[in-house]
Image 1 (cartoon, rainbow, N blue to C red):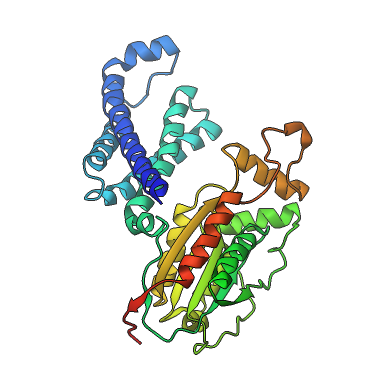
Image 2: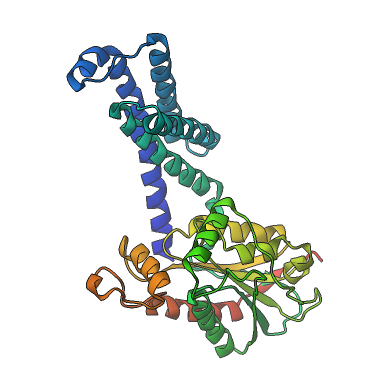
Length: 366
C-alpha cells in the first residue's frame, strides 16, 4: 500500500531530524552552558557546582552525545550502532538525574535535561528498530509474495491468540477471503496454561501481564499437537502488540522447538493488530518465522479505530469496563466501538483472497 510506504518514509525522516535536533541542543546548549553558566545560575538561583572539573566533564560528555547524534543524522545506516551508545549514554544520564532529584534534592534546573534524555532513549530505540528492520516496510506494503512450489492442498491453518477478540475478528475476515477462493480453513487457538491470560481480567492480572511484557517473559501454553507432516499449504499467524512486542503466548509457541515443523518449509502470512505501535511486534513475528525456515508470503498490520490519545483511552477503559464507549461522560473522546475499522476488515478479506491466489514459484529447499 502506498500509504504505508509514505508513512514509513515520513517516520524515518522525522526520526532522523529529531537526531539533528538533539545534536544541535547538546552541541550548542552545552557550549553556551560552559561559557555563561555563572550569570545563568545567578539569575535562576541555581547553586554553583562545587566541583567545576566534574561539571565541565559532564558538559563535555553531553556535547559528545550531540556529535554522536549528528553522525547518525548524516548517515543513519552507516552509524546505526552509535544509536546503541546514545541509548546507553542518555539512559544513564536520565537515571542519575532522576535519582539525585528524588533522593538527593538536586536542583530543578537539571531535571529538564534528564527528561530530554529519557525521551531520546525512546526516540533512539525506535530509530534503531526502524533501521534494523528495513524489510518490514517492504513486506507491509500490501503485496502478496510468491509461495513455495510444493503440493497445493488449498488448506490453510490460522494460529490465533486474541485476548480481547480484535485479532480473532481480523483473522475471521482473512478466513472469509480464503474460503471465497476455494480454501478449506482450520483454526488453532493457542491456550495458555496460566489463568491470567484471559478476558475479562482482574486488575492484578492486568498488572502481571504488563510487568511480564516489559521483562519479555513468555508463558507456558498447551501443546498444539500439529504434526510436521500436516497437509496445510498456508499458515496464517496472528499476534497482538503487548508493550511494543508480541504477546507472551505467541512468543512461547515460537520458542518451543516442537513447533518448528509447523512452519518449516511452508508459506506463512502474518497479521499484527495493535493500538498504534505495530512495527517492533511485526518485526519480531517476521524474524521468528524466518528463523523457523518458513517462506513469508504476506504481512499485514492494523491499528484500532481512532486517533491518539483516543485510542489508548478507549483501550484502557475497555479493559476496565469490559465494553466499548464507556464512560459515557467521555463521549467524543472514547471510541464508541472497540477494535478494527470496517475498512480494515475489507482489506483483510482481500488479503485472504490474494493469499489464496498467490503464485507458487519459489523452490522449496526441503
